[in-house]
Amino acid sequence: MLNGLNAVLATIPSPDRGVWYLGPLPIRAYALCIIAGIIVAIWWGERRWVERGGIKGEVTDIAVWAVPFGLVGGRLYHVITDNQKYFGPGKDPLAALEIWNGGLGIWGAIALGAVGAWIGCRRRGIPLPAMADALAPGIVVAQAIGRLGNYFNQELYGGDTTLPWGLEIYRRITPEGREDALAGIAVDHTPIQVVHPTFLYELLWNLGVALLVVWADRKFRLGHGRVFALYVAGYTAGRFWIELMRTDEATLILGTRVNVFVSALVFLGAVAYFVLAKSRGEREDVAALRAADKPGDEAPVTEETVVETTADADADVKDKKGSPESVKPE
Image (cartoon, rainbow, N blue to C red; front, side, top):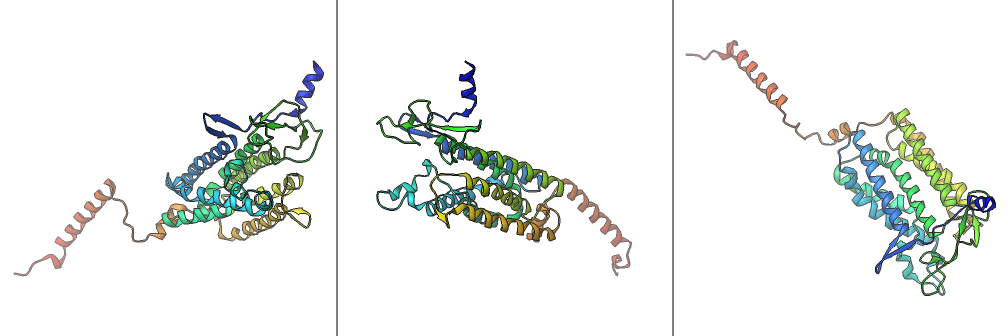
């Protein structure tokens, strides 16, 4: 019995499946994780934005632009860098549209998502760097939640391992008898492979980056896009070494996975921005920036302003009665 217990605790079991059916409707764990991550990012970003002087509801307005752009950008990057999965002899190009089966490149998601956020910020008169700083911790936590989808899909793992946290990979079969790691169901719990759960390494790393970003933001009152730059630098530092551990099919440059090079380049760019933007000083006052952008706006009329205006008018009348100019000639 002890031997059996040790065997169970020695590895991490994979889920039996990644897709459930509600009648003819497929419920995909990967999609649910992406949606949950987006909700968390918007919720936390909204709270941070209000704390920094923004208006409640603006993050949701920006998300209407950023999220669709980000999903398209993430899929485009994945299809471009892993084009061998969709194009060539025996491949189905239309599968490139099947986003529900996994495959979102974070680089494309952030790049094109930033374009969408810029459009939304321009329409609302919001400084993009300040908005990016508010969203940064929520984005990296959303990435961590999204990695759970890879767990259900039995994907993005590393090489074989005998470590206690090795991940069991099962053979999955569809009801039609076809082997399918995404849509199939595990035929038994005998692992065909025990591997490094690199998706889990990235998940934990991302949560650590979120804690680092929040701590640094509070301690040093970071602003002007430096919070976002710190998030990017922290994420890419982890992605660099995790990418080196992965064994799934990928585009190679000089025998090295393309995302290793991308991680290094983006890391250097983020660090450079973080250092150079320090000259701009502490966190910007969002409310003051927006007021400066709209100098013609009238101040809101309140009860206090009415009383002050009335008192000023009475004082003017008294001054005029006592002045020579107030004496009307006969």
